[in-house]
Length: 180
Image (cartoon, rainbow, N blue to C red; front, side):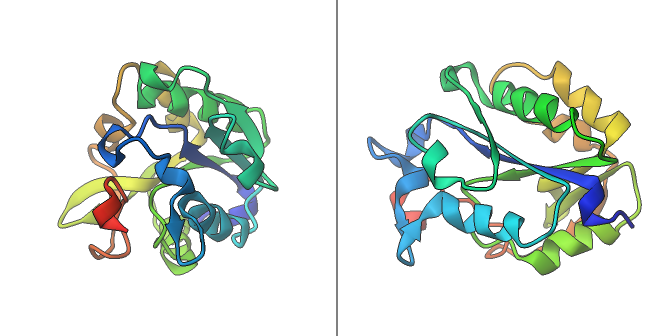
């Protein structure tokens, strides 16, 4: 088990959201709040040692309490956001980095606690046995995220990770307006 205050949480909120259409999906209304604020609020409740958000300039004002890193080139792919966030997270004296997505509004604190309680140098959420975010990387493993490139996140680095099961609703990510 790892204590929350020994973890830097990185919220990825800079994607181009092409499948969502012309609107900024992270600002889309979900239950009276912008979508990204759901994931951000959950991370804030956890008592993490650091909160880092990688986002565009329009989203930054929504992320009070986070160290904001602006990704001014979101079209370069998700890997750029991961690198920016993990690089900032590793500045802190933490033992692990949790990578979470701004378009996953239904992840609960209980699920995040389960990730922290699991053993392993990589711990991932799992839907039907497939590793996915949110995912926790021990500090040494998190350094490998700095080598990512293109439009891929850290999924390939989750091979062999300890898995914490979640259901389709808990781990739903919002890609299209109909997903809301």
